[in-house]
Length: 321
Image 1 (tube, rainbow, N blue to C red):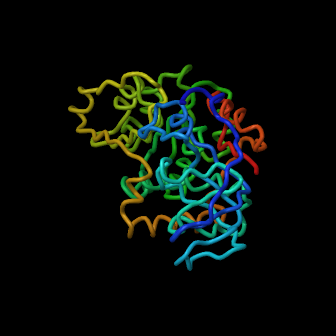
Image 2 (cartoon, helix red, strand yellow):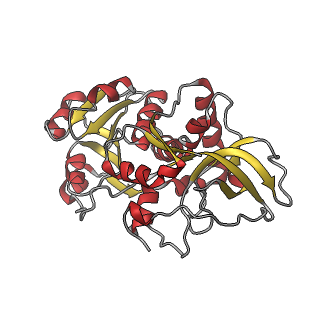
């Protein structure tokens, strides 16, 4: 059944040998994502098939390989690109079966916790900001919910591309952390006039790119703060309320508001390979560095989900196995 964190149960089940094209991983760390919370509660884009498993991200050691798998071998330290449907592969457990085509040997400088925290956030932010928007020097990038793992990844990726990240957070408690994490400007939306502050920062030009996981009534303000011909990505619905189209600024500024998720990049094989190469390079040289808020033990998996939904975190939540 779907519901709150309490519906999650740790159960002992038999894990089969991997089939053709699959790999079995002995898990060392699991990354948590808002998508899994939505899947668990019945508010995601796909419905669970019972008995349902859960989980997009895992890092660990290859335990066994199926027929025709040549890219990894038993004993390799690997992590999983979170690009398979939760209804087909769900990997939060002590052992996980995953498709070899999505298994990568992550950079050796990453810990298992960091590897489990890396791919969802960087692939999501990269696909929008670099692959589609092609942000560069002179661009202002507005990032709502900037203290989330994807928000922090967007800050790092924008800076790495030469753009100026403007981080949004509700209160003042996370401002100093966001500045330390690389945001050039931080706006506390409950205390400041969002549109006025963005106009002040951009010299009245507005932001060309906005990367929004929230939606709701705040979208109208983001449209007001956008530049002419600005691009607003909507990749989530954290507001959990009706999102009205801000028709007047859309028309007067010729704005583009588009839906986006990480699977859009994954469906472009050539471009995806280049994105993966660039992100891997950034992780290896340290210009991209996962920020982990808290690590929970596997037995405290339910508490990890409760913490995820508390919105207290700054960065990624990881479960250690």
